[in-house]
Amino acid sequence: MINPHERPLILVTNDDGIQAGGIRFLAETLLDLGDVVVVAPDRPMSGMGHAVTINETLHMEESPFPVDGIKAAWQTSGTPVDCVKLAIYEILGRKPDLLVSGINHGSNASINVIYSGTMSAAVEGAVEGIPSIGFSLLDHSADADFSSCQTFVLKLAQHVLSNGLPDGTCLNVNFPKLPVKDIKGMKICRQSAGYWEDAFDKRVSPGGRTYFWMTGKFNNPDQGQDTDEWALRNGYVSVVPTQFDLTAHHAIATLNQWDLS
Amino acid sequence: MINPHERPLILVTNDDGIQAGGIRFLAETLLDLGDVVVVAPDRPMSGMGHAVTINETLHMEESPFPVDGIKAAWQTSGTPVDCVKLAIYEILGRKPDLLVSGINHGSNASINVIYSGTMSAAVEGAVEGIPSIGFSLLDHSADADFSSCQTFVLKLAQHVLSNGLPDGTCLNVNFPKLPVKDIKGMKICRQSAGYWEDAFDKRVSPGGRTYFWMTGKFNNPDQGQDTDEWALRNGYVSVVPTQFDLTAHHAIATLNQWDLS
Image 1 (cartoon, rainbow over the protein chains, first blue to last red):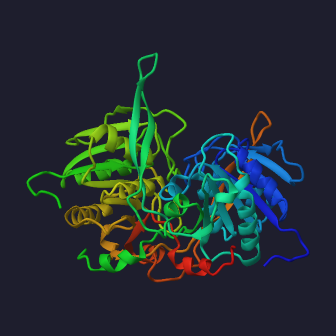
Image 2 (image 1 turned 180 degrees about the horizontal axis):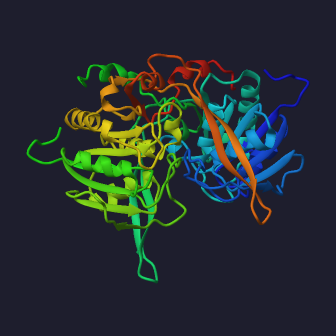
Image 3 (image 1 turned 60 degrees about the vertical axis):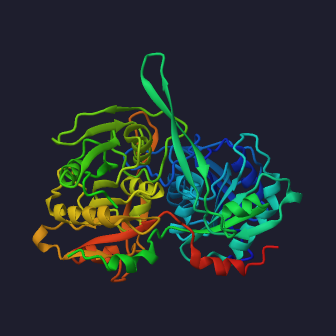
């Protein structure tokens, strides 16, 4: 798909913000494969899902970025999905050959995919018809060690650059928190049917106003060995083809039997 | 599923905010079917997708609401998805028997489903195992006339209360902007493969800073007569079963043929 005489254009974004270690690692790694432009939120945007900024203005500006050799880095006031749109329509003036998002600090396996700004940026790439991959490491810490991800990122990115992805899909890739020697390989999976059992930590401010922090516990009753959760627990990198057609096609026949007249 | 001797508990939310006309109409309409509690954002939250508030605090308070007979109304500082979680875990102390979201001022057909806070609230209900429906009217105006929606809302809500929904699904219901006499009925559909061709309106503030407004044009190359867009253009109410399993199951076989060793 890519002219072998031209370096492909690779857009790098994330939801942890342009300062995060994961995006630095990802941008640096992808320099081997093409011209890299970073367009990312100017602050952490975890949990933003597929939010877009339609009732407020957006700002963006060129930003320092601690990786030599990238073409440009921009920070925006917008969400991860806004960053993708601004990158295509204002900064690059064209669709990149590959969009990568991450590496997220924390899991986007199972139901986390729908809350994740990292994955929503990749899904937006898919909507735009761009081969897109979201990467996440199962380590929330700011100083997470991404080095085990490197060869897998390069292999997947190279494969997707050369072969594209099935129409209407992107990849949701999660890395177990393991040294590279303990990672068994990559496994194509489905999204596990886990969920968050939410709870709220209720507090009172010094001024007497009640407020809440969202907390919760992840439950995964889905014991399928074809799931992302199983792969990650068993030392594999999980790769889930992810789509933006939310139609529950299997339910259409059932609903057609309803008497709605 | 519902004990016929008890009135079902119905949670009403939206993304246009607790002041919007659509949520007032929806709450009032559903009083016929059960006890209604409103939990909605304290301001417009269109385009918030599946965003959740995890890096900031949440506030909520009881709110006046101009519909006699509802059990309670609460406004929160959170997104539509936050409202669903706060309602279940802090306000109701249990899962409602039905969750309805809307009526949105504007279309959530086709790709709009992934940007929509209205639909994300319904999807979150489905994640929680609650029978959930998102309603939208193809009229963006603040004083939109929702009266043609009434009989369809009641019919669908009653049916879902009595029969539930297929596991892991909710309904994305869109109404054409038509007088009730011109609506031909309800049609079970799939999500059309439309998309937004984005553009940014670039302006300069009085202080000299460049800023952007997101704009765009909706394109729908998908001519399928089984789509929500076709149904709406042809005078039907579109009903799309919508799911939170984003796995592109059909792509797994293709990806399994990749050589990723």
